[in-house]
Image (cartoon, rainbow, N blue to C red):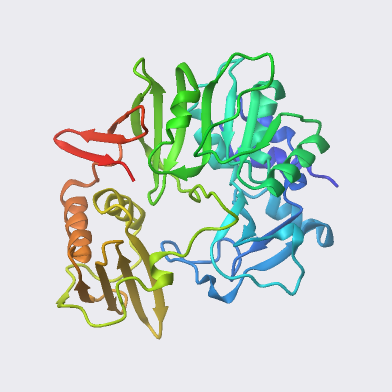
Length: 398
């Protein structure tokens, strides 16, 4: 299989000419880590920008060895390839399987791994903990750059770690790959290394930062992660008190949140919390038209900070778009209308969630940005996150 030119092309797309990551990406056969994957309804990249996918139709299995050209196209695209939907891994599926719902593991888009790895400020000899092994490709990038003896990778799923270790070995790499719940106690580096890690890179989202990560960082160590329910990248350096300080970066990224079991528990929307299809106790017109605003990710990030635990979903049917917002305290909002028109909004519960969304949109239009991005971060030793930007402050503890 002539994969080397494809890997070189991928490297040129995701890194600049002088980057130390360019030869690393070019050297790795990504297809070896994703022999089978799930393709969403309509295919990768088929949906209009800003519009969510309808996953109810079921994912379709793709088997690389059955179509090598399609395999190379997918593996050397800068796309995240989903390898597990619910509890069904593509490796264990048949062509008749059509799982519906959300992904639970993937091979992260190479450009995003490189983007996050830049924030690590890596030096030779650094010991790195890779949280979220997935397919093993991200671990392979780190091991190729630093040396396999300097990389430990963990995932909660025993099949993922065993398959990744085998695929890493098939390309000549033997980092330490372990099965562990990354929100709890963490394993140490390979025997012979000092305790703890110089860097922690997470390709799963957390909220708050697990205290075990802070305990595992060596003095002056650095962590890079994303926050659950947001598109926020957090970078922070360990401080003498056992916490860390840093910032929310201007770039955006989103990952699946950490899980402790084979799948995720049902969402508030799936369980029908708040009877959000009923009548609200307040009906009004929203202040902004229904649409596919490119700022939507920023709005949901801000909402997740101001109303922790909020969930949202989109439904498009017969030319009408509906947005649902649900909060654990029973509050809900439902906004419906044709694209480009002001929606009819129904709300109920102790919080007026859609009013909060409209207020966030007001601030975004008035100021041009939202304070979550670029905010100064302090992570307490217990993992609680304190954000400040100018006079704006927020605390993320759940």
